[in-house]
Structures are given as structure tokens and as C-alpha cells.
Amino acid sequence: MNLEKVIFGFFIILAMTLNFGFFVGQIDNPQHHLHYELYIAIVVNLIATVLKFGDRTQIGAIHLATSLVADLQLIAAAIIWTAAGDKGMQPEVIVGIVSLSGGAFLANITSVILLIYETVTLRR
Image (cartoon, rainbow, N blue to C red; front, side):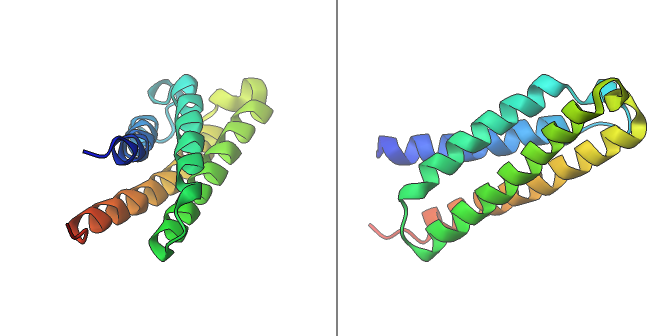
């Protein structure tokens, strides 16, 4: 078993599941979307992005692109939430934040699908 591949897969899947955890719930209800979970999702996504820098293959480039998209959307969501201040709990602000998180979630799904494809096509 390759420990590097285990850690790589762990962070990719953890990034997706944390993002999903934040995304799930009524889109306009701030009580369903914990801001700490968003910040943890950002940190894990950034770690997953750093782990993807070493791969020089075409699939590695797509992995990196999906991570950068997810990072950008999650960071934008955090900036909006922070900039909104007290208005951050209003439904129209939460909808925007959760929508950005949804886009990041789709990027994370793409990354996991690539990981599965790469694993299935791996020859011994």
C-alpha cells in the first residue's frame, strides 16, 4: 500500500465530504450552515490543492484545476460571509454563500471521479 496515495485520497474525499456537510440543508436557513464547517472545508481544500501540485500528468492538471475552482468558490463564500457582518444571517446572503459552496462541491465531485478513474485504470 502506498501511504502517499492514501493521504492524497484521504484529503480529496475529506474535502468533498466537509463541503457537502456545509452545503446540505435548507438553502436560506443560516442555522443549517455552520460557519466553522465552511472554514474547515477551506483549510482541507487548500491542503488537497497543495498535495496535487506534484503530479505532472494531464489528469494531475485537471485535479489541480478542480481544486483551484473549489478553493476560489469557498474563499469567495467566506469573504461574502465575513463582509456581510451582521447581515450574514439574512436569507439572501446565506443563499449566495451556500450556492458558492455548491459550486465548490461539484468541483470536488469531479476531483473524486477523476481519482476513481485513475485508480480503476491503474495497471500493476
